[in-house]
Length: 379
Image (tube, rainbow, N blue to C red; front, side):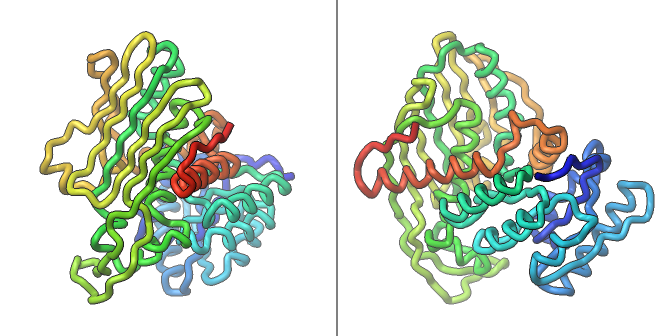
């Protein structure tokens, strides 16, 4: 069993370079109040020695400033075994390509370290199940990067629903549209997302985040019927400058996902997720016996055309036609709330590997329903 960890939690971070997703979204809140007193970044691990040294230098400076004293962040590279074996590391964070999730996370679990892992927490349902079972055997705490449940609008929606302001929930319609990724062009270094076998498809990543948001507020899915379809069978690879590399690859990731079904509460739902469209959009309606909650993207068409998807937006919230004020937020605020909830042992809001496995089973049921043309019962 894992031992009780006293604050600050000493964190070793696999995949934290000086640039990239982890550096812009996951790490910044750790160096600001209140998290700077709850976590201490002590080590980083990247694929190459050069990037590890650059990362360690950057975060040593940030950590020293946050702690008000000299802090040296240790650099590791290559195998995850080195950083997870560090006796000064209490918890390991994993933010790397999904293809490498299982190996790195399993090293941390077997070393008895608490674990943060970005969604989708392994490739397919089998890898996520292996990680969950290993973590359960070791008795460690786990945390999933389901940031969407920490958006201002999601927190407000959950407060409204849980507080009974809508009464019994009757139905919900949930529509999300993304303009980029899994479309006619794909950044060359994301080429692996075009093959669904790699566990990074549109259904796997945005689909998982979207469905977690939906079910965190309204509760688990009891049964579903689904149709998924790929409408963009090929994608041209482009560089960061947007120019074609001259290589075109097959894309078997679904770009349209339509799901209907019943929630455990008895409410009916309709979900439509789509990629590779001309305008990003977000429209979520919840009907209850006492009223209606609407969460909608209120931005104009020109902005929606430029934006990648709902992850970038702070939509408007309306309760029974009256606008509800919610705080503006961004991805670092969301990830910060996730880190804070874990440190404070807020099991209500922090997703763990068990919840990640349940979500993988929902995604698996969506594919099964579409392939077999039938309703799938989950609960």
